[in-house]
Image 1 (cartoon, rainbow, N blue to C red):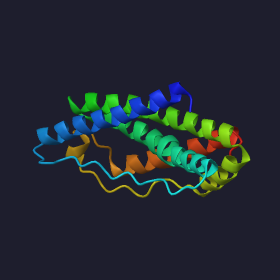
Image 2 (cartoon, rainbow, N blue to C red):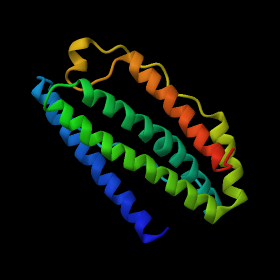
Image 3 (cartoon, helix red, strand yellow):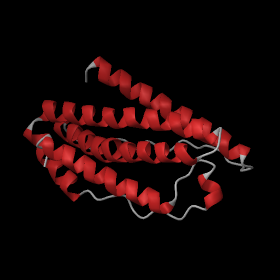
Image 4 (tube, one colour):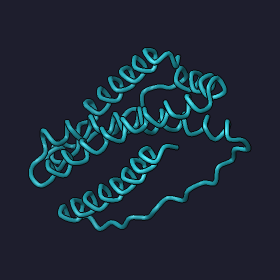
Length: 175
């Protein structure tokens, strides 16, 4: 991958660590006793470079374009209703997640450019099969002030984000 793309990916990983630290601090301000545990990273189960590019393209769409894009919208909405310091935390997360979504689109484009039809075709299938994230659980009004969005808003943002990502994928002739 181009050095600039790899650098952005590493910066995004650093952002996620910072998000976890800030959210953990916010939870502790609210009286929660939590600990952070890093998830296990599975080894790639792909045999060829084309399969790795396919997997990276699909994961970039699902986790980056969709997941980070929706997370950016949710954090932005949460920042608008949250009290300080939670509003500041969410506003920072919103900016970072929007950049991560843009990175997802760029990684996906790199994979398609590098892998051609062998990446474009399975990616198109995955995009066409994608669906908005599941129904969010309810969030009490007092939690909205501490930086959460309501379940209704979360679901609307997920549906909107999914529709926007599909429109963009279509404009890019990926589906």
